[in-house]
Length: 327
Image (cartoon, rainbow, N blue to C red; front, side, top):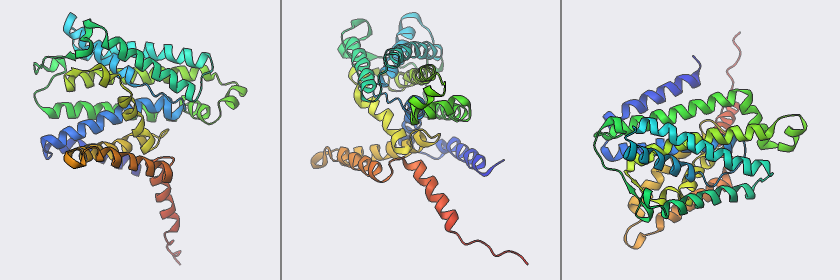
């Protein structure tokens, strides 16, 4: 077994054992680290590898969340199956958005605006549909029944979120090693050159969007049954899309571990700044600290923290003195 795999296995074992020694508050922080890393990995497929910047991924979270919640409340369908239905509907919506965008050649800011528009449509529809709670939102009754994706012990959510993050990371790693991942990276670097070489760029971008939106829609079920409250302005809003995007950008978009590292950097920082810098005279200062960090990353680590760490490690190995040859 190679050293990176040993390190990865050790990290997973440490994370699996942490709840035994963590406080309830720390467990909650880790849950959000894992969850946003999962959503970041889902976005990373289309935004990081394929280079198609979606700024409306919250619409898939909202669609998956409302779908599983409504199926459970009206038909009694367990959210463990409802999450797949929500993911499928999110994938269908992602396919529609991708078709409209890619078939008509929308790139860059135009595709960004298209995804934002669909997120706003989702928010407005949810706000004005009484069947899903309307502007008051949708509240889920807590029963503590694991079949209903509800747990008495917060550590259960910890392990569910951890498994989701690891599964998404493993999927991204598998895609990166295959021809599909190579095509996505080539499209990101020069789409016109790919088309000239005979690559069906439309097909691969569509697939990337469908996979990304399906995973994000599945994450919506976790969002719904961890918070037990769905508010249209929150679940479909631009702030949630930004939270999803910013993890892979800070950690390193288009890399396997970038979204994970970005979430481990930003989620605790965001929580600490909110707790200590958002009250009294310091109200709002936590947002400034958050913004300053993002500016520093963009200016000094434009490729993200993970590629910067890799370069630092490589330069350290090159500068280390070589042992003299044995006589």
